[in-house]
Image (cartoon, rainbow, N blue to C red):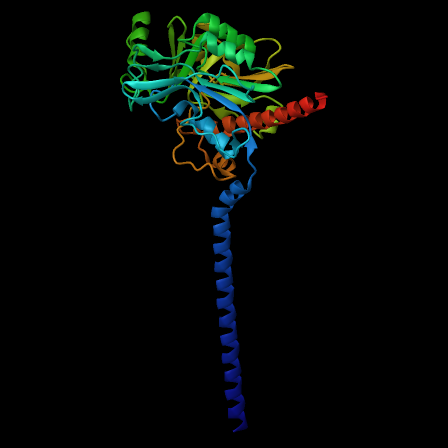
Amino acid sequence: MKREKSVSGGQQDAKQKGKKLAHFRLLLLMGILVAATVALVCLLVGPFAAWYTMPYRNLDVWVVDKTVPTPDYQEHKGLFWILKNEKIAKPGTQKLYDEKTDYFGFYPYDKDTWRELSLPQTGPRPDLIYLADTYGVYRGDFMQKRLLGEISPIVYGGLSSDDNRIIGKNLGDGNTLVAEFNTAASPTNAADRKTLGRFLGIQWSGWIGKYFADLAKDKEVPSWIVADYEKQTNREWGFFGRGFVLISDDDRIEVLSGHDFSGIEGLSFHFREPWAKEFSCQKPISYHYWFEWIRPDPNVSVVADYRFKLTESGKAKLAAVGLPEQFPAVMLNRNTQYSGYYFAGDFADSGLRGMPFQAKWIPWLKKLLADSSVDNNDYFYWNAYVPLMQSILDESLKNKAAAVAESHRLEP
């Protein structure tokens, strides 16, 4: 009888221990689920919360874009995303810059209606002047959802003498001028191009180029390029696949097709030191858009280069037209009055769609996740353009603070 009671008591103890263990496991599982939920919420909400707690930073920014054939703001949208993500606000306010309303240039409304907003003749000097694009708007592209790329009469465009006069008058006090392709090529005249070149310490060679994912006729390459090439060479356009079309000021055309370059990149972008270290970017970055050959003055710093990776046939084609395989991509003309940057490519042009700017670490995340093997220029945008512009904005803020401090020091 005692033995039976002992066995029965042991079973009850075992059951109690089993219940406690099961209860502990349930609590542990619930704790893990709660912790995972909290971590997920923090991961999703944290970047947005961090952005909203960031302070607004005030800069007076002038953006010029004369190439807005449709209200998609393609040529400057990538720049404005950075301004908003960095929380750059208009002077004395907490109002962020809007790509739809806060630029100088061409404003399209409908097929027959548009207006021009010119640079201001008077007022304080801006902290940053950014010339995004002055190529202009043409009748064949105006309010067309699909840009045909055909030659047609110009509606509006080109960097003017007035533009240069106002820009020159407003350079000083340590502010910054940034210009990129295409701000000085056609339809800008030679005199105005030369004036802008003096501000930036550069000269244009007259050659531009563009990457095409498919060179085949009736695909991406405009028909006028095909026609001009066939007329110049007396050969049929037989190119296909990935490649580059090079065009001179006098409409001479050269083509680098698949057998002319090696590797998957073809053309790559390389930061020089110390900028490569500053941006943690020592590796080459693929580049897939418009570019040009520029000659910097001796006192101008080259921040980054383009490099072609060519076969012997590709090298021969470049040599025949007098173009180097490595050439400047970003140049800096720093002097006692202002800093002038020139980007020898269409950097701010971006296909950003639905990308929220109100999240602090989006650029860092996109830099990690962007795919260098695809044919668009997203990888370049996140790995080269964004860190470069973040650095220029930080520099502009420091220069503004230094100028304000100096003006206070000189006050009686």
